[in-house]
Amino acid sequence: MDRRVLLLLVGALLLSLYTHVMVFSEWHMPTYGNTMIHVAAARHLVEHGYYPLDNDYSYGGGISNLYVPVYRFALAEGVFLTGADYDIISRLFVMAFALLVPLGFFLLGRTAFGEWAGVAAAFLSSLVPELLIYTVRPLPQGMGLALLPIAFYLMITGRRAPALAAAFIVSLVHQEAAVFLVGVAAAFFGLKLLEAALRWSIDRGRFALGETAITAFACAALGTATYFAWHFFATGNLDVFSLAQFQHHEGNAVDYALLLSKTGRVVLALSIAGAFACAWAIYEKWKTRKIDAELFAFGVALAGLGAIKNDVFGLRVFMDRFIVFLSLGLILLAAFGLTQSVRVLKKIVPGERK
Image (cartoon, one colour):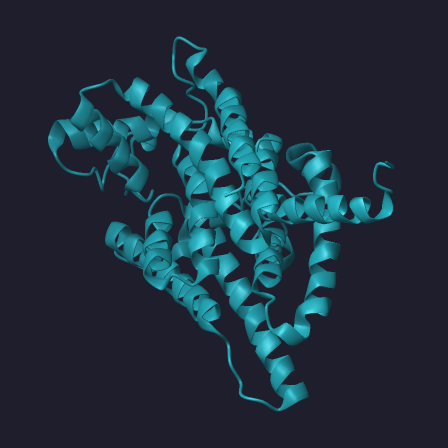
């Protein structure tokens, strides 16, 4: 690894830690976002030795506990092993998120577009307001957001066993993260299917999808099966559309102003540049058949756009909450857009004259 890249990566990690250290600034742990509901389930695990499947503490008991359990198990395990308070372990989780987010984006960006794009993605991950808001909270959603870039990295490299393990874990960490992971995997598989069909129709060659596409399909299938299995285990049925979120259509519509305020001008502008750069790269590299990175970046963005506009499809559930997941795709595109913009500027601007 280039020493400059390593130093910049350390800088990105320090920046992320700095933006998240606010979780220690209050005497009491932040309680917004149902923080204490998850603490209650973890405490039940530690004190009684079993998961409170039939006791959702947010409603006083007697109602099935539908929330996927990995975050709560991890919190309980941290308390059990260290003897520390739930408050301290929860805050330390946030600092772990602060490290995992830029590291995950570095791995993903480097694999897709090179080391400098990886560094850019690591830094840009600290510039999205909504991503900071959700990862500074000691909640399952923060853990899901911290794990998703790593899961995507494993997916795009075609490492099937680790990618499937990541899909399984994410699906039991947070429901929305699971939906997004499945959506990204399905979108990438669909784009690879379209690529294979176009190549077959033009070249009349062998119809081939490639290992990364098969891995993505397997991740989508496993993620879906995992969540439905949990839902059946918790409720005894497979009717996810009977959940209150679907019945009451929780969430607000997303317009450009809301999207801009939650993603930030820098990342949004650079992501547009990155989208054009990806499209041009696909055109240039079509004959080489090495366009997985560009297709994956588009897959993440398409899954995010579909999620924030799910009201168009009649779902009308958590549209605004999915903006933070869309930002993951925008960060990847923005990193590529930034590196390509610098590359173009180097060609345009004359070098220093001797």
